Image (cartoon, rainbow, N blue to C red; front, top):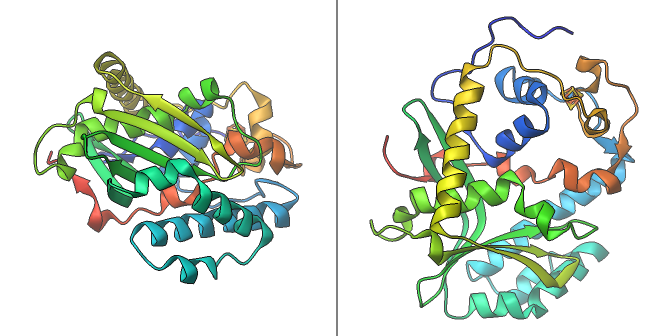
Length: 283
Ligand code: SF4
């Protein structure tokens, strides 16, 4: 299938870490998913049932964590951990010193959405699993990951999620502070892995890094908004885990989900943003 000619990004497009990551992985995937909004014609990975089960467990874990952090009784939440995986993850969560320390003494914003304009035409939005503000005004962004294998820290450091979540908190964090700015040096992002509870990955922040990141976000958005043609990735291995294989004539056989999970960033909750509840600075 050919790219549509003169396909332009609409004004007021809302970017997210997922769409920017898709663009980085394959411009064509960005076009198909976000501009043409095509449904998913192929399975993402094989075996399908195991992958779906793992994704459902991941979603369920996020719900348990959110309910715990807003203060629902632990024993009631624990009864909802119904599968062996969920029970293991939940036990790891409850026994985690990191989570215990965050829960005691910090102001917690679970499932928080923030947004900010990018230039005059577009905006950037993110839904955070948790932002915890400590008594000494440190802002810890926590993201739960239910990966089977723990990714390398330097790989996670380069993900658009790491870049977007920290930068957006600087740009839109005044929503949490009644107008005071959030400085980059106050921010740290932590990925907490349900299968590796004592090995979280922490990424501090600073002003220079923020300026580079925001510049990259703006440059990338400008690049996308000026593109006329969205090319297919030259890395054919990415196509094995992509639902648009049939559109691109890139094979019919899906890859194995255990190999794919870090590539795919299987976090459906990042698409599930309630736009009525976003803390956003004005255009
Ligand atoms: S199948 Fe390959 S080329 Fe097509 S959208 Fe997916 S990653 Fe891109």
